[in-house]
Image 1: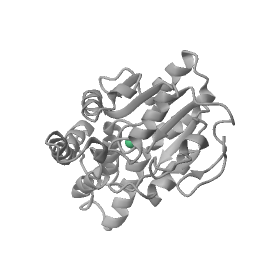
Image 2: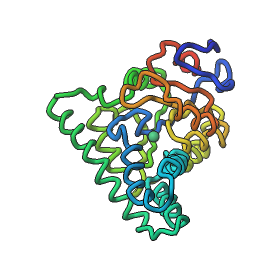
Image 3: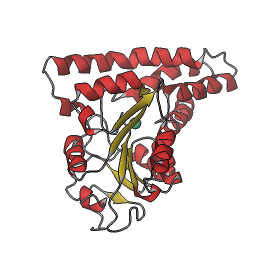
Image 4: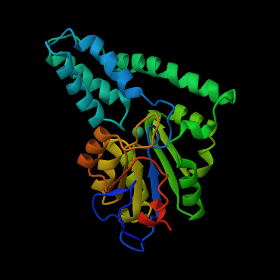
Length: 269
Ligand SMILES: [Mg+2]
């Protein structure tokens, strides 16, 4: 395998050892493969600011604080981000609603955009690949061709992940699809399950745009590829995501899956 850096692949440390092909690959869903909810973060922060802005003197500082925990908790169930938001409101002397309430309001808002994308897809106005990070399908094809088991794990509701995976015709690539409630596994539990079933931890490869899957993967000694894509164009590295993902321990940073050397850099071919 080649170990060079290329224009689109930033290597933070040596990941998979030379010659050792990944034995299992875990993908996060939103922002890693699928763009159904692209732009969710400004929607979430705008919603939070409707409450936060009256609780402190400097809205910009409050938004930065919110962005910090929202980014830090990306990849887990949205409820966890909303629990952090409720604590933030409380710490500023406000009276938060329940985290479940906030989650439900956020989903209502973000689903407007998502529903419009699904409608456009069903009408044929856009194609499935227009709603995916560039190069996703070719990467999935290559991984399948290499005979590597693939798993999808997401903090988004299981029924939503399953439905969208089917709609985008990517369901067939995966040996297992795990969304949040009623989930069988969180990302961490899926990794533990793979290891207990005999997959060497060091040969587990994860693609993710959230801190959770990157940290969980690094913790078990796997290799983590941080997908720091600049939504919605997804052609360049998003500088903020890059910093968060490196902080979480990413071995590589990529903006999308278009770099021709990606497979060889990761030891897949
Ligand atoms: Mg994600």
